[in-house]
Structures are given as C-alpha cells and as structure tokens.
Image 1 (spheres, rainbow, N blue to C red):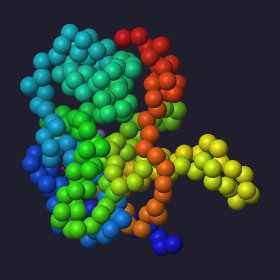
Image 2 (image 1 turned 120 degrees about the vertical axis):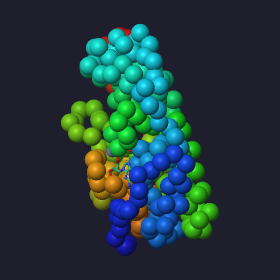
Image 3 (image 1 turned 180 degrees about the horizontal axis):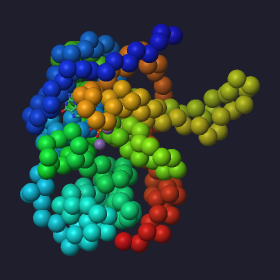
Image 4 (image 1 turned 60 degrees about the vertical axis):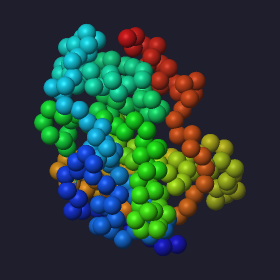
Length: 250
Ligand code: GDP
Ligand code: MN
Ligand code: MN
C-alpha cells in the first residue's frame, strides 16, 4: 500500500462572494481520481454568501436576554438563534442543533477570518455543498474526487477543538468494522469508525485556526472503505443530547 500524501493548498486569496473555490483549488494542485479534498466550511460559506453584517441584525428579546447571560453581542446571538433549529443549552454558551443534524457550539457561527462586524454561517446544506464542489472539480479536471466540508468544533469530555466533517461525498462517513475479525479471530461487534471526522481532523491540523491561509487540504492515496452515512445519532440514541435538554431548560 502506498503512503497517504497530505497537501495543504496554499496561495488561495481571501475568498469573496461569487468565487468559484473548486476552480481556484484546481488551479493550484494536481488532482487525481480517488483524491479527497477537504475544505473549510468558512470559505465555502464566504463564496456562497452565507454571511451577514451585524449592523443588519435586530436582536429579539430572547437574543438580548441570552446576550446578557453569556456576555455576547445580542446581534451575534440573534445570528446564532437564526442558524439553530433547536436550542440544546443556553448557558454558558449556546449549544444548538442545526437543520442538517449537526449539534454545535454557537451553531458554528464564526466571527473570525472575515471583516470586522461580519458573521459567517455554516452552509445550510453541507452535503449539497460537498456534492457541488465535487461536480465542479469533475467538470474542470475530469477526475472523480471525494469532498469533505469541515468545521472546527468542540467536543464533549475533552478540552480542545478538532476538525469535524459536516458534509461529505464520494464515500461513506463511517467505516463499519462490525462483523470483521481482529488479529486473534474475535469478531468486532461495535466498532464503527467515523473516518470522515478523522480526515477532517487532520485537515484541520494542516489548516490551522488563525492566519495560516490554508483553507483546503488534498489527501492522495487514502485506502477505500465501506460503511454507512448515519453519522448523527437519532434523538432517541443521543443520550448526551437528552440529558442536556432535561437539565438545561430554556
Ligand atoms: P473553519 O474551521 O471552517 O471555521 O475556518 P477557519 O476560520 O478556522 O479557517 C481555516 C483555515 O482557512 C485557516 O488556515 C485560515 O487562515 C484559512 N482561511 C480562512 N478564510 C480564508 C480565506 O478567505 N482565504 C484563505 N486563503 N484562507 C482562509
Ligand atoms: Mn468555524
Ligand atoms: Mn477552523
């Protein structure tokens, strides 16, 4: 098996609404069939115009209340509420579910890597976003790639943020090891590896969080896998969600 080659895609400008990020990526790296392109949601959202000026936002009474409670600009809180389908926890930060199933701190709304006074929303349909980038890359290069749209997220139980996949195409989110046998012949009964998050995590490491200017990462030679796409727990399965909801009334 060949080694996996990971390349941070350098030299991209500051992304503006209307930019074709797939074309900009294809100008800067050689893409081959089976490669995986991991893209920071932040540049996809900037290119698609999923941004807003705080000056345009008038906060509701709820946003004002939560702004006071959490020490945040009520207009920013309103942006978070607008991006949320369901609030799981209000304090010390808003944790909410988005319409595509992701649960995240402040609904993934960012104020970094964009002009002062602007916010960036996560793409409303990151699976469609990944498919759109894949289709563009195929049009330009004739190559079939996998695409992951990432965001940097916090997690339960551990300090520190890591990259997570919020949209993907070209492979399943999960590599399913159930039914496989280990080195000693024991059957694996539980293990479902969230491969998309592992790749997103490494991509996030290559990107960095601040002024690195590397919003996309190319993975070459990843071995294929099979599994399924049920990355998000259902409401019934998700014990953390249930316990938080029960204990953090809003
Ligand atoms: P997020 O994880 O999707 O919220 O994105 P981050 O704000 O953490 O940015 C990830 C990487 O992309 C970092 O290396 C940033 O410096 C870089 N980045 C963000 N926006 C742009 C941009 O418009 N152009 C370029 N070239 N890099 C950017
Ligand atoms: Mn982000
Ligand atoms: Mn990030």
